[in-house]
Image 1 (cartoon, helix red, strand yellow):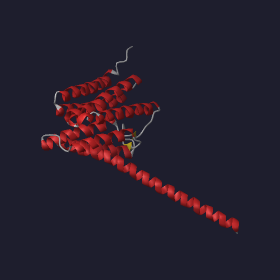
Image 2 (cartoon, rainbow, N blue to C red):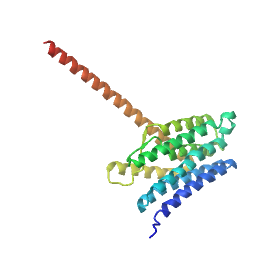
Image 3 (cartoon, one colour):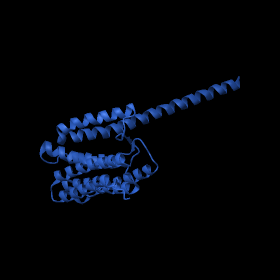
Image 4 (cartoon, rainbow, N blue to C red):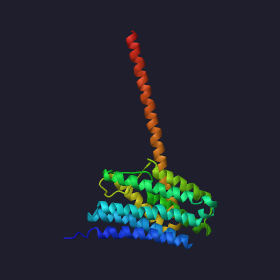
Amino acid sequence: MPNYRGIFPGTFTMGNMLCGFLAILESFEGNVITACWLVMVAVLLDLLDGKAARLTGATSALGGQLDSFSDFLSFGLAPGIVAYNAQLSQMSKWGWLLPALFFMAAAFRLARFNLLAQEDEKGDYMGLPVPVAATAIVTYIIASHQFWGELRYEEVLVSMIAVLAILMVSNIQYDSIPDNISTPRNRFRLAVILVCSVIIVIHPRLLLFPFCAAFILFGIAREAYRLVTRAGHMRMGKSQMSADSEEKTTDDTE
């Protein structure tokens, strides 16, 4: 008997892909804000397709590959093209370079994610998730138009695209959305997500970007703290080994 459980999550996946395609078309037509919102709809559909697949038990290798193709189109190509048509096309003949860097980093990030998924990797994400990077770009454009009626501080957008590309291919860990509330940590994460979502709904045009930026910066700060702590532990370990060595030398001399 045919198994139709995959149709439900597959609908979200195809919807995600369609939104990415339409976002590209709208940006070329000059409808940049519409294109940005289409990317945000794709983000929502991407979130729903994974949850729907797990709830219905319809996860499969085929579904995972389709999801990656959709993510590459909607969160790799589309945001870069939207940014290009919004501002970067005016940056001489090299305006294409940053969007190209962004979508190549997104392709690497998605390929690495697929490999980790095949190894049943659980827990936090390694590298900035591609949908988050895409969200940062389009919500900055939305917020800028909401504040000033146009895209301003283009240097911020340019720098942000470069930094986002680096973060996607980095080993910095970012929190994933928990599938259950069986642990205190997962319950805290879900509570934070719920509170932030309620606040964002109040004024999404202005609040989406600050919350997205805060999530990205939190991951960087946490990784920096881990590196500093690890370096401190290594120094303490070396000091202890040196002290033990000196004590042993003294005992041997005696």
